[in-house]
Image (cartoon, rainbow, N blue to C red; front, side, top):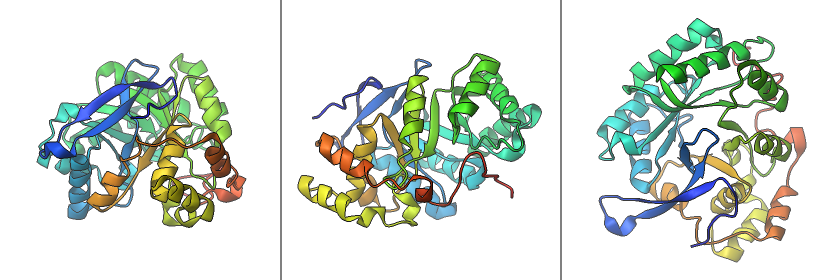
Length: 304
């Protein structure tokens, strides 16, 4: 097995399933707060109801142990139902949710966190993020203080942010003295966001990538360069993109509806991209035009 060449890697754990022949070896990231995360998470955006429950259950069976949701996804209840139905013990799963912009005020944030816990049916979040900074509202410092205190109250184990730029990170760190453990940002081959990845790393923050396959809005999975690299390693384009993220110290949050694709997205630890491969993928970056929906963190408002 090829070990991933970066400092965030902590160790490997065996994920046991009902079928022992389907055990998957999963690497882990060590965070700045002393906790650890699986290097690949399962995303739940746009999946809800009974279909969503089945999708999360098959993902857990495939080997995923971090489930990423959000109040804005309107599916926290579905995630909770999947947890209850799963044969995997709660303590082996990591549940991550996110604070919506309507709850950036301190008191609203604390209540929102509590309500999310009630909806999912768990006592505490393993990880919880501020979904967007929303600088036009300029209340994200207050929201971050709420997460810092919620962690002290025992409502959250690891706290982080999403879509925060360096200037946003600097403000909350200076205000509270607490550095986020993770920053979940848009990152895919057409918008590699490498400058922000570098800034996160310099602050000791793990970068997570949302929609690493471009939300199926762009054609990144059909790009001829990525397809050619995939053929070289006898892999799928999605696996190449996941590997590109991992070798750049980035944790991808992936989504797939079928069990076969969910399992394939974890089958990325038996090959390593060359330096030239990574440079080729990096060259696909389109800058700001590459964002899937033009959601710049300094401009995007959840409720425009």
